[in-house]
Image (cartoon, rainbow, N blue to C red; front, side, top):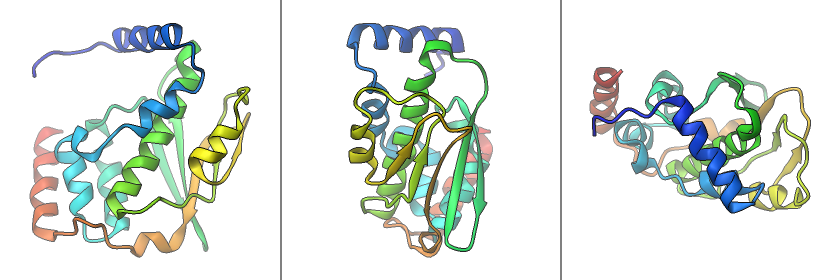
Amino acid sequence: PHAVVQLSQELAFYRNVLNISGDPLIGLRIGAGYHLAHYGMWGFAMMSAPSFRQTLAIALRFISLTFTFFAYSIEEKANEVTMAIDPLGDYGNCNQLLIDREIAAAYALFGQVLDTKFPLNRVDVTHRSPRNSRRYRDHYGCDVTFGSDRTRFSFPRELLDATPRGNNPSTAEFCTQQCEFLV
């Protein structure tokens, strides 16, 4: 539990995953397998928030407790919410894998919070379109733009008022306090 994995070691791991698998879409599969419980208190705090808006506030406030390689920002518009992810460094040949893992994980986690297939309006990624680009559309159920200026995904704004399946304000407060302690 006290082991520290250096960024260079983690990137070496992902380079090996790419080389061994030979699957350019492996990031989608890795991210899809993430579960809220994998994140400990951060996941439990998200799941027990009274609204999805508060889930997102918790997620962004304690993002340092996750496995992310990205900085998140959120923009709320009249009909949709857009979350942008910007890399914290240069990940070389792991860029596509890490972008795909990140968006697939967020998609999976948000679906778990709301106990539904999370509806996305669109996904934009900075990497080029792989041969099997249709699999992205099939995975997310929306249009995916490749070669975008920024990586981001959008979803309907009304989801902000949705109630998470684990809604429990006292649990959310306890888990948020634990997240503050961990940070």
